[in-house]
Amino acid sequence: MSRPDPRLVETGPLPCLLSVPAADPGRPTWLSFGEVARSRRAGFLQRLGLRDAAEAPGADRVFTDRGEDHVGSATSAYREERVYRWLLSRRLPGPPA
Image 1 (cartoon, rainbow, N blue to C red):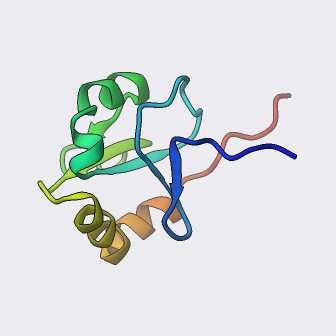
Image 2 (tube, rainbow, N blue to C red; image 1 turned 90 degrees about the vertical axis):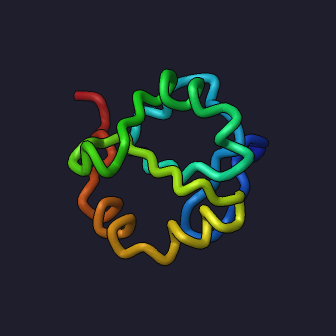
């Protein structure tokens, strides 16, 4: 049985990243920065190639930062219809040919 990644915290239908992943996850990513992740912002931006969701809403790797704490940023993200529309418009990469 595989063990869950300790960098992930289940917060509902989507996990919450608390630290920069060791490798690119190879999938669309929306990260809402809170107080915990904000201190690692440069690493997240570099590793994941995140772009500001307000400037690049069509990108597959985006972030928002409203200056909220961890709970506030998660609550805002789960309340925001735009996040759900973005997630539903993305596809995971298919299996190798």
